[in-house]
Amino acid sequence: MGAAKKIREARSMTQIKRNAALVAVTAVALGMVTPLAVAVEQAPALDWKKCAGSTLDPRQQCATLEVPMDYAHPDGRKIGIAVSRIPSENPDARRGALFLIPGGPGGSSLTDPSNKGQKLPQEVRDAYDLIGFAPRGLAPSTSVDCGLEHGDLALSKLRPWPAADGSVDGNMATARRMADACAANGGELIQHLSTRNEARDLDRLRAALGERKISAWGVSYGTYVGSVYAQLFPARTDRFVLDSNDNPDPTKVSRAWLAGHEQGVEDTFPEFAKWASEPGNPYRLADTAAEVRPLFLRLAERLDREPIPWPGANPEELNGNVLRQTMLDTLYDPDHFPALAALMLAAQSGTLPPAPASPPDAALQNVTAVGAGTLCNDVAWPTSTAVYEKGVAESRAKYPLTAGMPRNAMVCAAWPYAPKEPPVRVTDRGPSNILLVQNERDVATPVSGALKLREALGRRAVMVTVNSTGHGSYLRNGNACGDETVSRFLATGQRPAADTYCR
Image 1 (cartoon, rainbow, N blue to C red):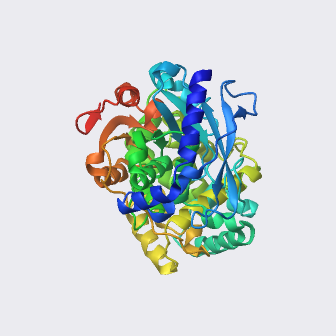
Image 2 (spheres, rainbow, N blue to C red):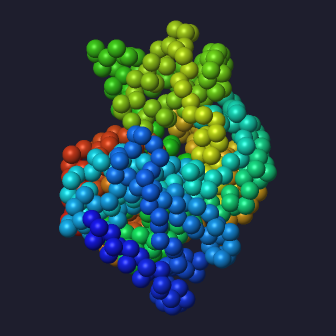
Image 3 (cartoon, one colour):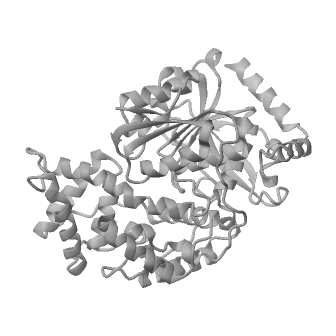
């Protein structure tokens, strides 16, 4: 281990001493990166220490990476990015570093080397150092906070569910209130949260690790981060796994992700309906699957008219939109189906269980600020109420389960800052070293959106569609065929020759 560490440190110093100007000129001339995606070779070496926290694998190490807050002014203010690693378990078999790119925006992979990273097969853990991080803005990295009202931290408020009659006026008012709070309390950093900058931070981390290339496993929003990295730095990619894939539409970006919930719910709700009508199920809702959908719609409409008090919840009532949000949350994982069924049964009886525990407001404030800043800085959203009124009306008519939410106004509709850079257009330029894995029924990143990313990447990618239900496929809600395909690629580089289906 000592010899391997010295080699890595020597490689890191070699990277650090490169002529950044020469790298920049060459990369821009080749069209491989944007001008602001350079000067990353100046990253200082990392000072690895034991991580805080008793639940982590004792092998996990932590450090702080210093990066520019604004890559347009790299000599200006610096911020810290918290990073972690568990070194390869077999230095003789080590290939490089596997970046675990979290979802969100607002998710962290800082503990992932100790947690989901340990679910990776032995040959993968031997081949890579497992690398986690907390993206810019997210504690314990230099953090942001919008100071939102407690009520605006409710999931049923953060997801822009319209009023019972379809009105979006309340959503626009919420968007303005939240945007004003972020402008007042978010500081300068909130203006520099973006997917481009997260990708640049990752490349700076690559340089600090002394790696010529990186491999990655990105999940959900992490698939967009991984795609953007592969677009900006194609020559620095090794084996990339993109799991549960976002539509990369450069004209909409996050608006396309939100809109995707329409089809995602339609793809997934029938699985819940089948489960909820099975004989012997203690949470059985109906005799047949066909009865579950109208039952849900009637109950949501009733709760729109007659909410049930729910002390300790946020808001402190079970209304139609809280039920719809619970439905959306539940469909992420079939293991969560009982939560929705139990709530529906309780609402029918009029006696609710204790409100589920919620994370502390401070944590929600931080996650929400990172999410808002990233989503709103990546692409400009329409500011006209009429745009959302039209979209919501069309969506409610075609997709009643989601009641117009996926085309409604989030905080970005009133965001006070214009994007500093255009969205990244993902293309097929670069090496063919990307494997997409995608569940066929995924409420958050439906297969219809994943196919858009597959189309954009062209010859660079191969896609494995998995006959399974839930968000997060590899080693989570997929199947053995999909898991084996991804593991083989990470360990050996072998991909299917063409797009394939894991039945």
